[in-house]
Structures are given as C-alpha cells and as structure tokens.
Length: 348
Image (cartoon, rainbow, N blue to C red; front, side, top):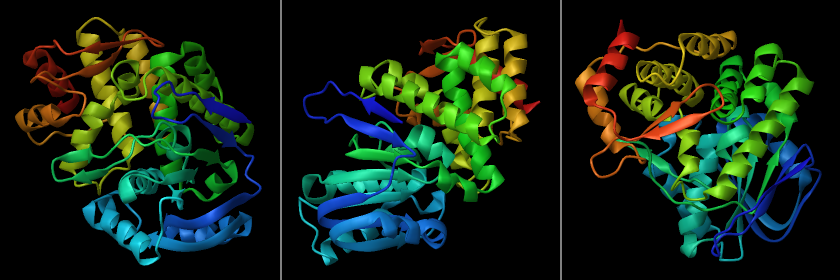
C-alpha cells in the first residue's frame, strides 16, 4: 500500500509512504546508512540485500534516547565528511524514532541539505515519527528542542521488522496509534477497543490508518502552525516526564501514555471530557500494559518546565486537549491553578 504525503509549501517535496512494498533500493549515488547497534545486529543484512547503489557505508550508533544529542549528531556528520559525501549523496535512517530524527537533522544541515529516506523499524516510528519531516536532538532543557523541518525523500514501513520488537517497544508504538485515534477519529478508536493489535492483520490496518491520518494532518500544516500541534496530545506532559527521568525510565510512547492521562484529567476539569471517556482511554492504554501514572517530584518545577515546550509562545503554555473522543481543543488560556490541580490529582 502507498500513501501520499502531499505538501503545499514551495520549498518542500511531496513523497510516498510505502507499507510492505520494499523489494529493492536502487540509487546512482553514494549512500550512508545510519543505524544503531540493536537494529544492525537484527536487520542490517536484510537491508543490504535490498541495496543496489554506487557506494555505501554504515554509521552505527549506540541504542537509546540518551544518545540523541550533539555528540551523536556530530559523529554522523564527521563520518559523512570522512567518506566524502556530497550534495548528491543520500542518508538512510534505519532504526526507530531516535535514529530517524537524528539522521533527518544531519541530512538537513550537511552541506546545507541533502536527501534522506526513512526505513523505520519500530512501531512508534512507523506510525508517527518517520512521517512529517520533524528532525532534532535533545539537550539538558528538554526533548527535540534543537532541530529542523526536513522532509524525507521516501518512507518505507515494513511490518516484518516489527517481529523482533520487545513487548515494551511494541506497546510504546500503540500509544501513538491511540493518540491519533482519540484526537482525530472516533470510529478508529472504537475499532481499537475491539481489535487486538497483536494480530498481524489488525496491526497492518492500524498502521495504514495511522499513517493516513498523519499524512493528512502534515499536508494541512507542515510546520505545526495550527492543526499539526494536535499530534502532540499527551506530549507536553510526556516531554517533562522524560527530561525529569533523564530518558532512562520510560520509552517515549510510555511517557506519552502517562501524558495522555494527565491531559485528560485537565480536560475533565475544564468540562471537555467526561469521566466515562477518560476511563475508556485509560483502559485502552492499560490493555497494552502502558504506564498511566507518574509521581511528580515538584509540582512547581513540573509546571515551569512547560514553558520550554516548543508549542508555547509569549509566556503562554499551549495545551492540546481532547474535546470528547474524536475531537480536540488547543488552549493557551488555562490558569496555573487549574493545571496544578489536575497534576495534584495525578500525584494523589
């Protein structure tokens, strides 16, 4: 199946997301494959068997969110210079969201921008991170605060790569699927309530639906100036949790699951979401063994960290909230007392 990502900006090129259609990669140029130690040991030989290029080399990074930093970015760039890539060369991101974000960032700044393609190997990156052109790295202030918008030349989502995913990684990807259903597609959410994604046929349907939703949103708002911000539902809270725990306690999707529950409690206090809807969303998250609670060390520090969120501007915190399942509101007018009250509820 092929899903078009149609971009409207004159500086961006539209591209195709292919699902289970990768049989050959042929390029008349020099190629650098960026991957990590885990993916390399499991799947690199499979990828190399599909590759037909002028010349290639492999850049292998350590695995984990804690390596999504300037040091790793510089390692990628130095390798590109060492192997004499030029503006006609190509990078291939072969891994999960961390690899995809860093490879895309490197591609966007190497000699002022070269092409890259995404071959995501985790469920989270297939349904979300690989589509849309967000690139970046983390720093001490938070997640993805340094980066660019740089669209891939193509995306190849192969469900065969998901068969080696650990259960936690699989569940982390499901959190992103649930996120999109809750905010944009109530019938899809209801379908998820009755269909087990451990079934391969159901999983493929969920991936196709999620990618289609993401492609539609990116086409409407490539640079997150409006509706695309809704894809950050749960993330405003999740990014603070990840930073507080030094990216070592939770996978990104696990933090998002907790963030969704926190956001829902705030929506409930504002009368946007019913208690029954809150319970349904939480139940679906817990069905995939995702965490839904987090003990906040300092409510004041947690709240202050929201101001570093990329969506916030003019000293106002922007929250993405669900307005009944399948709907959303973007709010930047919520009093601190209400937010703290919702966080206290989660901390109880």
